[in-house]
Image (cartoon, rainbow, N blue to C red; front, top):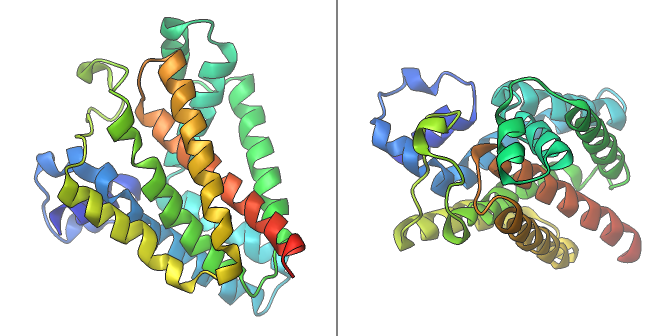
Length: 249
C-alpha cells in the first residue's frame, strides 16, 4: 500500500501525504503503480463528465473533465509533453535535446504541441457517444499508464541522477510489481464496451514506436518523456475509439 500511496502523492496534488508518511524509497517504484493513479484521475474525470453532462452540453462536460485532471495532477504530464515537443523539435542531437527539455521555459514547439493535443483530444471525445465516454476516460487513463510503465523495462534513464528534475530515478519493475501494474491497468477494462477492445492494440503500437524514437535520439528516457508518452498513447487510444465508433455500429 505504501507504493500505491506514493504513486498518488507523486502523480497528483491531492493531500495524500497527510494520510501517512511514505518512505523515500517508495517513490523509486511509483511508475510500477502508475496505473493505480489512473483509477483516481480517470475515475474523477468519468464522474465529473457524467455529472456535468446531466445539466450542460457534452462539450462543456468534456472540457470540465479535462480541466479537472489538469488541476488534480498539476499539469504534470502536460509539462512533460511540452518539454518533449520543445526538445525533439528544437534539439539537433542528444545533448541539445536533453538541455532544451530541462529548460523551465516553454518554447514554440511546446505551445503548439499542447494546443494541437487538446484540440484533437476535445474533438475526438466529442465524436464518441457520450454514453460510453465515462468508461473510456477511466479505461484509457489507467490502461495507457500501464502500457507506458514498460519504458523502465526497455530503456535506461537518460540523465545522471543528480540531473533529474524530480530528484528520483525510477527502479525497474520486478515481476511482483509488473503483476500489480497489470492489475491496475487491465482491471478497469471490464467496464469498457467490448466493441472497443480492438483499439487496445493502438496505444501499444504507438508506445513501441515512441520508445524506439527515445532509444535512437536519447539512448534512454526521462521523466518528461514518461508523461509525454502517456498523453500521446492516450490520445491515440481516443483516436482509435472514435474511428471504431464510426466503423463498428
